[in-house]
Length: 356
Image 1 (cartoon, rainbow, N blue to C red):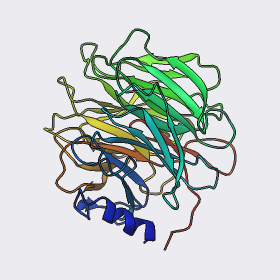
Image 2 (cartoon, rainbow, N blue to C red):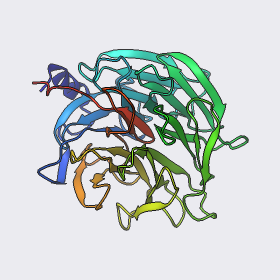
Image 3 (cartoon, helix red, strand yellow):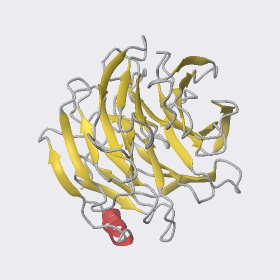
C-alpha cells in the first residue's frame, strides 16, 4: 500500500475510510476509478482490483463539495495510467491530471472561461497520435462545447450539438479503426443524442438516438472493445429522468447493432454512469456502471455474458451518485493499448508492477 494512500485516507475523512464490498468474483483484476457527485468533499478513489483501495485523495482541496468527474490515461508517457479530473458544477472549469503512481499533480488548467461554473466532463485517449493520452473535455451545461488538449495545450475545439444548451458528456475510443482515438459525445439533460467524431478530421462518423426518440433525460457515454473485433464499441447509460432511467446499452462500433441491453440497478430511477475496463483479465472490455443521484453503488459486468464481476460502495453510505472510469484494451498499434473511461472516458492500459 502506498504511503500516498495513507495521506489520502487522512485527507478524505469526509467519507468512511473503507468502501463497503457487496460482492466480487475471485478472478476480478482491473482498475476502477471513482469520483463522487455533489454533496460531500470531491473525492477521487481508485480500486485495483476492486474493492482494494489504491488511491484516495481530494483533487480540489478540503472544501469543494460540487463533485468530481474522472477518467484515466497515460498522459505523461511513463506506461502507467494517470488520473484525470473535471470539477463538478459550482466550481470554475478546472481540469487536473495526477500521476497514477504517486498521485502527484501533473497538469492543472481551466478548460473554459474561468467564469463558467457548469462543471466539466473528462475523457482520455490518443487523439493526436503521439503515444500520449490527450485530454478530452465537455462543458457540463450551457452548450455542447468539446475541447481536446495535448497536455494543457488546446488542439481541438468544436460544438458537438450546435444550439443545444444542456451540456455534453464525452468519451474516446478508436471507433473507425485508424489507430487514433475518436471522440464520443452524448447530450446532457434535455437531449438523448449520441455522436462520434473522427479524431483526425473532426468529421461526424456516427449519429444516433440510443433510446426512444421521446427520451430527453441525457446520455452518459463510454467506449471499449466489448466484442473483440479490434474496434471500440459504444456504451451508453441514461441519466436520471424519464422511463428509460438506469438503462445501459452497448452498440457495435462498426455496424451500430445493439449487442447488450440491461438494467444494472433494477428498480433504481437515479440514472447510470458508464465506463469500460478489462476487469476479468480476458483482454476484452467489461462494463462498469455507477449509480446516479440517490445511489452510491458501483457494479462491473462481463462484457460478453453480463455476469456480475464486482459490486461495491466506494464511498460507504454516500448516496449522491458516483462517476466511474476503468481501463481496458482498445486497439492501437504499438506496445501500449488505448483504453477509456467513463463517464465518459478512454484510458491507456498501464504496464506496471504492483506498488508495494
